[in-house]
Length: 314
Ligand code: ADP
Ligand code: MG
Image (tube, rainbow, N blue to C red; front, side, top):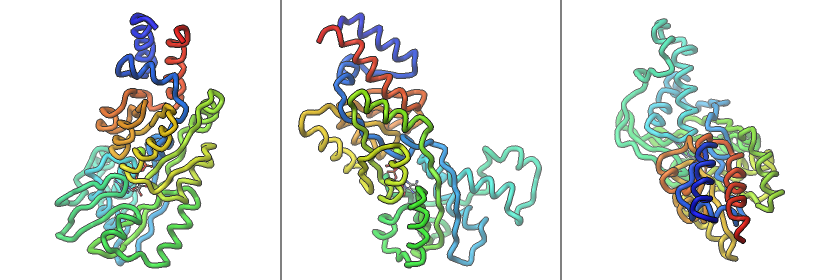
């Protein structure tokens, strides 16, 4: 392809919301054989929603949700946003102990005054968040995070988790002062176009794989809906990069599509890194492509564009 053709293709991409960082990235996309998709925020809608709240302590629903939302308020993760939105709605519209000031109700989408102060916030990518409230540690995250911090998960809670996970829900555990105080079930439905894109890629000779930090049961349930057969679950951010290397072993060109901080090592290692436009800045920086519309169809657009631009000179 001539420099002009590359420039034209880059322009066509930009007009369609596909930002390509350079001619090399444009050229590599034609050879993609595997697309490794992150699950949360990539294959799934970034608008996850809370479906279940179970509290195992003598706290009101309002108190519990305020605690969890305050811990999650510092995080950009799609799960955090879902929990915050749910807690905010409960606080303003459903909590019987809250006076219904009409001004609050009108502005509730932006109001954060009901949250409590946190100290020492720290996000553990792919696992959850940690901070202190009232000088007690609060952990909000998955099994591996709580187990590592020495929090006991009673078998009754394990049963609740398995049930939610088999129904494709992501389970968020909440520990306060080293005690498991509740779980939040979050439904994170697939993007509407996900299954069609997986099928479209297959017809183009490109295989789709799902990689996620989420647990195996949830991952498999979600992958099944998207028609993805190959799943890697309970993978750490560094592990995601290892999955890319695994598929690169035979010289194949591998693309990674991701949205999170936890995807940036994999985006950097991939031959073609594609970041979801609605994702975090760190993912966008690590990627060669930015899919501005956050629509998975643009993975196909990107490969098509590359194939068409370079077809003639092969
Ligand atoms: P994915 O790889 O599917 O994008 P992540 O790696 O971002 O998922 O997260 C993996 C798991 O870590 C989540 O399913 C959740 O259990 C836990 N987790 C990550 N971030 C948070 C958070 N901010 N709050 C609660 N749980 C979290
Ligand atoms: Mg993600």
